[in-house]
Length: 236
Image 1: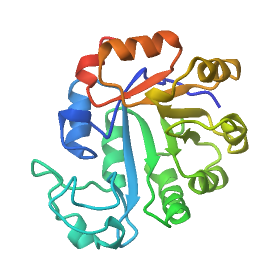
Image 2 (image 1 turned 120 degrees about the vertical axis):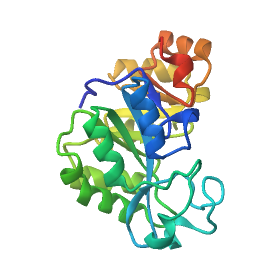
Image 3 (image 1 turned 180 degrees about the vertical axis):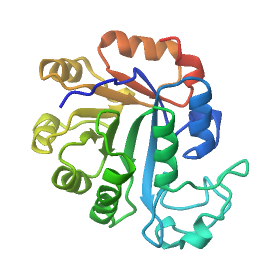
């Protein structure tokens, strides 16, 4: 499936450096500045609630301690995720995105051993939270998670995530019926771009914060860029 309305510049972890990562404040920062596309990470709490957070542990991005997957909701959602913000639930984030017409890349970021459970939980909630499929892309590094999404949400577009794509990435992408390939900017070679272009696979890369680097990647054929500095790249 193609990717309609794919923004060239996508704000990383809700608001990039404009607000604490993976927070509603980040989404509001993207909205207020007119950035049309956002990306965020979804993991399960200790009670199985899908929430926005990147790390499996709480220390880097909150005032909490320990593992996200072992922290009950009552404790998790009371934490400070920066500047007085709290960790959002997935339903809160999607409601805000839908209200303002954002394009969303929802990355499944399972805690260790929770790949299938995380994807199944998101799959159970998503048709109600985001009934349409045009302005959302589900991505993951986890092949088991993507297989669940393929089975449970076949009409939602999926992105296959790598740091550096392996030689057989196209075979894996086709097996998963994924719509896009995502990788680190350092892994974007001419050969990778040529293969992606030949097979009409959009290539999205992360995390690019310098205008010159972003402009060059787009010139070479990258379809979209994830950035922490949308304020620097919004003119591209």
